[in-house]
Image (cartoon, rainbow, N blue to C red; front, side, top):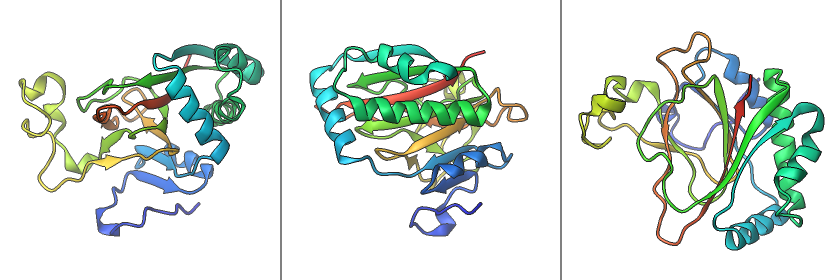
Length: 222
């Protein structure tokens, strides 16, 4: 499988990222060298319109739901009952849940859809999960670091109260990578078998004044 990479200087591309214009890239997350798999895509005009209306109308939107693999459409309809006109958004969520379930052989997943006006996790960190799906429908995308460009001993308490920029976490000349609107990413976490101590280091982006993000995450449920 060949990934179509970003049109950047290839020397600056993180080796552990699998990036493509097709969701087939998600299977690359099973390779030990890949810590993140990114499907680059553009949202349809209808979906963009629904997202804009949703963010404007429901500034406090916060949905947490369990979606069963054998009832994806109906579970999403129920979870998004306050958004009856958001048909394109519901269809997109159903597609992503179906892909996530199929890829990891899951019977159900935890879905979170939330409007954010500030950075939810502003410090770089790792997740104690096997793998998480993240996608931003509106606003700035999640930020992450390649393994070769960081000092993991500076995560958490290791920062000694200093900012990520001051603590020594980020190596000199390391580029902070960013997802963009519409991108769908699989972030490999600390509890992925064989990935202990190597979970993807990432953070929420700073949100500009007046900006609202619409963030989706999908998680394993045992």
